[in-house]
Image 1 (cartoon, rainbow, N blue to C red):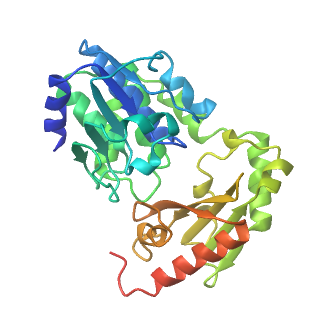
Image 2: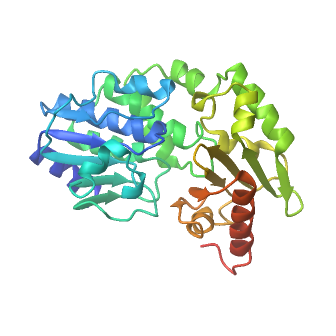
Length: 319
């Protein structure tokens, strides 16, 4: 369904539970918070399922919105979730009963009863903004998390996925009187000393391939410990390597406990399709930004992602 049909669906139903994806980013949290507030503005009962692993930076947007223990929803909606495999553990009881999925990922698996997908949008927040306008529900409280959703998924409007529509949505949200200056400082211009130490270690341990156009950075548990860094300090690390002159494609490999490595791939989509690279390892996402998970050491994960990159670069087309 399109965004107008999604709005009509939301008007017809009530008693909502909104789901985000695990390892939540600003888009999924911002969309859930904005949509929840919009539904409440319409007099609906709406809650967001508590996020198990949201960073402190993002968790505050859900204050006052999370579902109380024992809440039994009639309607379940997911925001920015491309596959049920991305649902956190506490969302697993709802994986077979999601009524509406609102998403912008080309790799959307259509797991819900109804899906509102706009794969040309830089952020799912752009779609939620349109839906809220269609609902006639918009104010500064709704617009603030939606601005976070839109701005974080396009790197404060500098990533290649940014479109005129992205700017249009952001401008309209700013017109609601949101604290845009404060939000931009918080999300894009503030780094902890731990984060800066971690970035230094990343530069020391990164590897360049394909005549310097491909950068791969392992982020081991040892590096995290040396920098005294936590997950709070790793937000949007995938974009860091792309700032190096001459680098077109990047992969950051984050080691986790239990022998698991999570890989984030960023590419010049005209030359390398990140979705297809990560699909070779069971992942997915967007043409310019995708991810996957590999079992093994960081060295094994680096070999795996390099093989996937090499294999995709050898393809005649990246469409």
